Length: 103
Image (tube, rainbow, N blue to C red; front, side):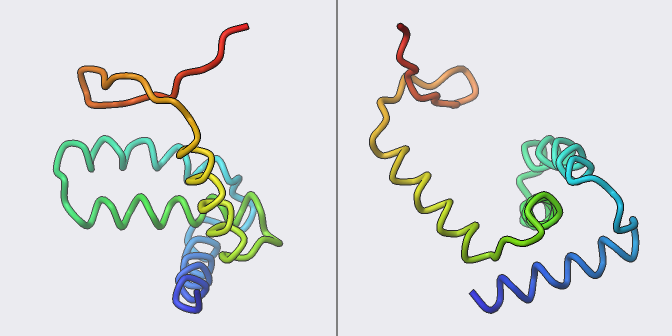
């Protein structure tokens, strides 16, 4: 957890200094869209690092009082939810969506 906190702080320092503290949390998410396409295209480790940096930057801007522990706890809770869902078949890109209940 300590290393993740260090990373979050390093990202914050870089991002706020380079792009301004007032930049909205949506800015790194829009940038993330571009990085996802690059990762799909290249499959390079660096693109995965870019995506992670942008996710952490968006998280810390959107939830400034939340810890990385809280984020990881939320991820673990989401895994539990996903395990309980029913899943459909993969589409042409291999994407599998959970089946939504229709009333």
